[in-house]
Length: 103
Image (cartoon, rainbow, N blue to C red):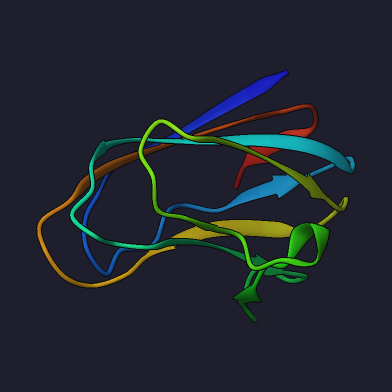
């Protein structure tokens, strides 16, 4: 299992990119200081055209610190997180799963 950490994200920020080399479950946890921001998972087939991700048919958003979310992500896609604007958050995002690599 691989672990990727995106740390110190602020308001209106975008994380680095990670890629899934095999499909399967990925666990995401958010920690730090959140001041009413929404964190959204985005997906791209080519690391340049980004859309919001809808694993399991629902928009992948995180708004609660310490909550662990499990997403089924398809193989060969690029993913990143965006943080909405406002406030002064200091957000850390942890991603765990088999076949994920930071890009």
